[in-house]
Length: 385
Image (cartoon, rainbow, N blue to C red; front, side, top):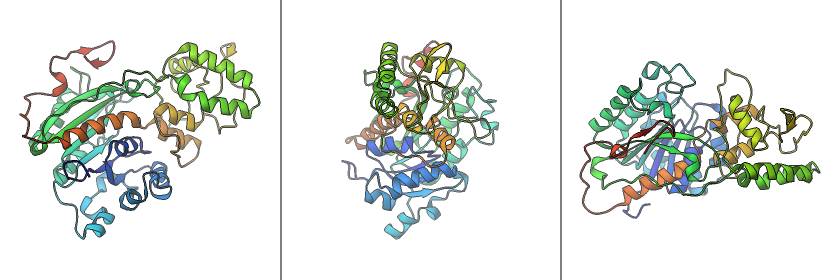
């Protein structure tokens, strides 16, 4: 319940392994449903939310984990726990937040960039749900390829915003947020759209960076020491710590990859080299914490270091240490690599919460996007400044 007396309920589509859900939960939102088509990711949500009750017994009881295609999701039909508890379907305008990280392949630079012509484009489905539910706020996450100005998707971006405005929303615009600015030890820019229903709009402020850089050395120190200690090679732990500390930076973007292509590794050649500079072998993912094979993990004629475990990759992504992943190693790693970093979702979630809890008169509706006022595109940093 917010300070305004209205429940901060949320529904999330394309929830994946729960990165965005973890962040929004930490920001104060209570999920009514998490919709995810991938069976392994849905099992991960079930494991952590329903079985292990990491968010508490109340949310475990009220949150639906729906392993289904979001195109088939009907709130009035599928929110069974809500319907049983309230003795009615959810009413239009009752939901606080509709959120989702809709699939990125239609807009990813790594794909064919078909945009709205790609059958994986779920923006129309998301916008149909907005029309049906009329939530107080909307949050959509995607790759940076969707929001670069003057590109092939500029018309599509305007179509999305036009549709939201026609449904009675103030579009706060798209903002590129860099995960490393919010305590995530990884370079991972993500595009975020926020919109707030006009009758709830009293202003909105995008979250500010924390100002503190969390390095790979700091993030992995405890787990690396534990792994090397198990292998009885604390001397190698000291080598790893020295190398990673001297690098003093975050890791490159983790890549989850596609079900159609290969196994788990840490990305293209350039990314693997960056990981090697941090004392990590990026050629694969370790089978478990005991997998410290120093002979295997030599590269380029020098000492590289161990492969990351799935749990360590999750740390790099910003997941809490107690979050567990379902499926075999490659399926688990793909869930991690495709996730939205929880700390970024939390920062945006807190900004939305603050906006919804504001009291007083409604704010004047801005003429344009909030993030475009006095800002220009920095082609080097790939962001709006």
